Figure 1 (cartoon, rainbow, N blue to C red):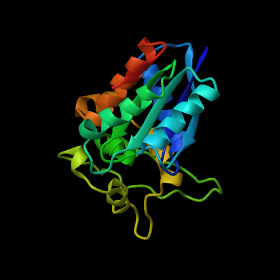
Figure 2: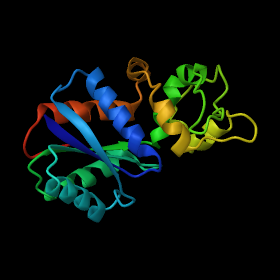
Figure 3: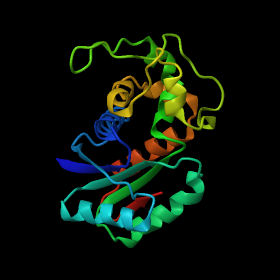
Length: 210
């Protein structure tokens, strides 16, 4: 059994990232002997120092694969991704590693699946209270990556006085992502994530995506 490490940056993304990557890995029918076991958060993954520290951590802790997953906001991943990948190469890891930049933010992944997400009933919260949820029938049309501030966009679809909270809502919505719907949507950052996982599954030793 091999172990994978995920580095992310957002609040509430630890459980969400494990759920997303583990489910997608299985959906893609990738190496069944590999398990994604840990998520660590860093606020400096947009810097050379932050990425190299993530690589050092993966090496010291003895992980077998490394995925760095972060938001790229308004910058284009095609422009910024090569520099981040080069920083990983300079770290000379002896395990495969991948850098995936989500344009614009993690919650962009929710937009193609809103019909499914909005139809769900999340049930009670950790103290038994009813969890606020986006209005049933909510959908999104157009360019999924055109929305600047998806968290705020989602909040405007919540009941009055409520808003989307990553620590509360992100994992619940991630669990409802439909990978077939995401594939059909043509969302570029989802395609990048799929290719990254396929790369990690098919490589051993020093290898970097992209």
